Length: 127
Image (cartoon, helix red, strand yellow):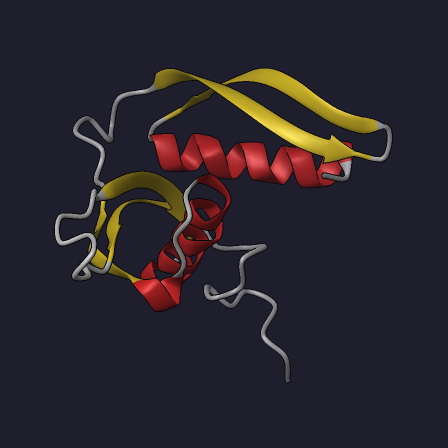
């Protein structure tokens, strides 16, 4: 039968925090390229790299075919057993337009707070 509690499913798994560092491939015209670092919340490294290319394409003139990922490391919370307050600024598209929102969450890690944000936005705002 079908297992509803599969940890690979995005709807059930926790997101993890990754620092992805990438750059445009060096060419004869541009031998020194600038590396760009991004904080990505994703369930695994493959998805984190994919999200990196998705966002970098919107910000810079760079894509996967003309670039490379230098590192993709998971970030572990320094004090993962201490409850902290997290404030998150988000921008999302709804049926009536684009909205900016600030939400606060109380959780153990940043990744868990962002996961809670995704769950709430999916359930409450249809984002």
